Image (cartoon, rainbow, N blue to C red; front, side, top):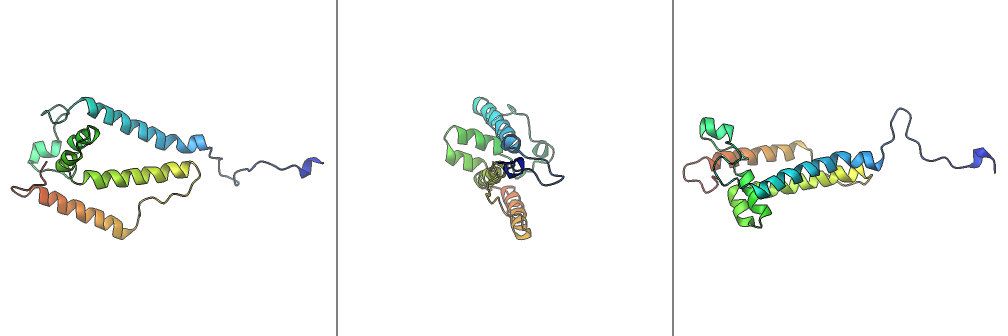
Length: 149
């Protein structure tokens, strides 16, 4: 057998660096570690105690609840197994978490060389997300709204 007959390992296309599985999953794993660290801090430090995590700047200056208000309390409740209380703190927390896990799974899958579809990036999808967020924000700021955190 001559040297020309031997198979050559796959090489990246000209001008493209080889992406190893280790390098491809570094970003998603670092992001997961960051989320786990913050979630761990939320597990031990109760955001229901006023001022324990500081104050929301928007609420402090305007008295308006932003779409994320109640998110820390919701995550705290969720990691302690109180899912109804988590939804009560911020009803958008569950759908947001689902989309984030979906996007993260697709990111990790790409890093591993798999084809996992992530959330849509189409204009109708983005418009729907913006409309739902705006309607939710307005509704939770109405007097006596059950959506207020």
